[in-house]
Length: 386
Image: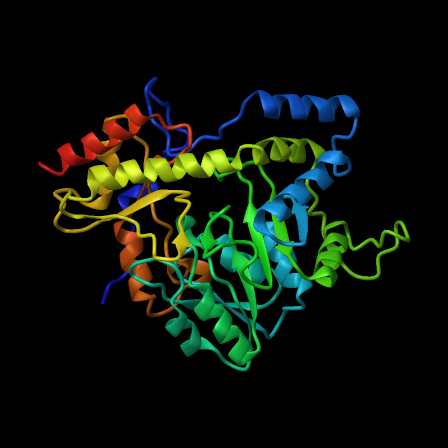
């Protein structure tokens, strides 16, 4: 039985350490003149808080990109998830099935409502939630399934939606890491009842902080808009007949988002090109398992992620240190949620635990140059020959 243990990578401060001049970071935002011009325009307009033209423009552009009717901008990806779950009426006594391998915000957003996150193991190839594991966990208390499109590959939405239809459940996409990923011709954000996105600085497009709820349900969209602004109805100012939240995005953030939306296809194309370079250079290195892209799916490779097994001469944690010595940033996979103190179970999900202990994210920003990608791959191959 695999058991969770402290990992060396847990104690590395990769974000704040002094960086050498030629250090290749795990991610960095791509910002330029368009973003600067939009922010200055918002500043000069005087509308810098949660009103202004860029809020509506960004919501409309992102909703259209996802192929949905409604986009509701919010302060970050976690509040997007919480708002969606709360607006659906999920609360105390309810259960939401969440993948064991994801960022903690997926579980926390469920917990904030008073509902209970229940952890399903993940598929060993796609690393996304396993429909068979989900079905085994459904009880009369289950109200929703929350697939996460981990590191940019969509979850198995057809199977999950079929389960939801069979058992009368809701499907809440956590699409924080998968802007523009597709199942067939449908993009994430349009694959369930409602979806949540993050625009943190390391996401495919960014507003610094920020998030978005997307849905085709007009009533749900209206409820999310009302709840994000202290549950104040637009027709009666300063009247609050229920507890709401201050989850609004600012016009300054939305201005950056509008500019980023003009480049989102460029960013995704570049990330897929970078992934293709990694794949070609690393596919024959013993001990490395590369990410998949299943037939009919489009992986946007938010992070180019791989697994390090016993056939590679370094452990995953040793490799993180070795890469750092070569001025290359990297980071481990998330800890399984059922190994974290707030959510710990006696027996953790075995596949999620194994992936967590072997998984490594490589530099993945669209701004990576071809020379940098070659250098990273050359370094991985050289370290693999030790």
